[in-house]
Length: 441
Image (cartoon, rainbow, N blue to C red):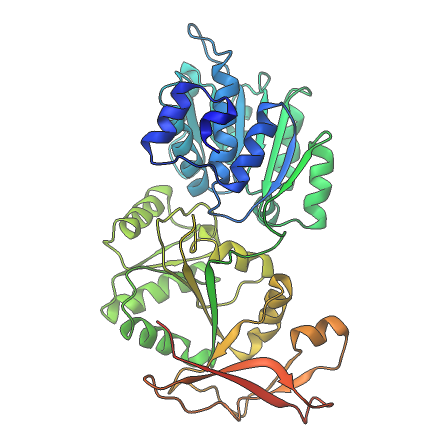
């Protein structure tokens, strides 16, 4: 199948071809025809599957077929995203694929001067890509009219809810014409998400190219058990003993992101950080430096788990586990994109085992545990851990200690500690099961 088979205009197909795309991805093969047919859709797909083009291409086709060449261009399509980075990324796709259509587009988000956005809107645009807060600022100042919207896109809707935008979303929905086409995209589907979909969508076509709440099969998952006090030391050891060209590190707090990046710099590692307290200009500069290779390590809070499109990013490291299991999927979605392989390494302390268990349950996956030589966790620290299959079955928890963590040499086969135990009836009598391989890098 090619893009021509969808009935897209020669101008759109030309722009797509110029960027080397000839064959639609699975999400594109399903969403493009549905959108062109005027259907509301609720689509679930992992990041990196081409979903942005999956809604951008048919929107450009619909709007260009009845565009107004002269006079003022009212906003006819609104694409709502949770973060500035994602808004900029989506707008770049709109410009890239719509370069020959004559359609006008603009981006609207906070962290930058509002006046250039006002001038852009005054000239008239067909498509606006926006974040909720700044969009409502424009509405309040009467610099943006949403009464002509024909297509409304809610991109990364699950992240919208995670970030507390539900009230803003409902306000925006009340400002839109009742008759419109609605497109909802999400990597995960919670009950709250389904409730939002019920109020937004009319007889939607449900499109799910991958299981809900799943991670890319192209990503290798590894857990390194380690004490909290030695995480930074282990991180330095891993970076200095591997030839990783780029590393995206996730951490919980803004101030600790700054501190960790400074500690890496002092150790001779070219690093910077990105988080919500930085201005848009600072965030853009940090991201561009990372993309073009001037910076090797980017330390980010979860604000960066969406909207970072980095070609062939080989590695994501969870320095700290996320507060929500679903955020693990968003974090590691930065690697293993567009058919490329990737690796996700998590440094897990004893008090993070519950979150690790929730992540494994969500993914229906037992992540291999690799004790790094010289960084064996303190054997005096124990934690209640329930093997995934037993958690589902309701059995009693197993006491976890690191007493039997093997001493391993970097150049010899290593032992992967698995939560699963084998061949015993009681938790205390279970034997740990080990698998042999080599410590990867």
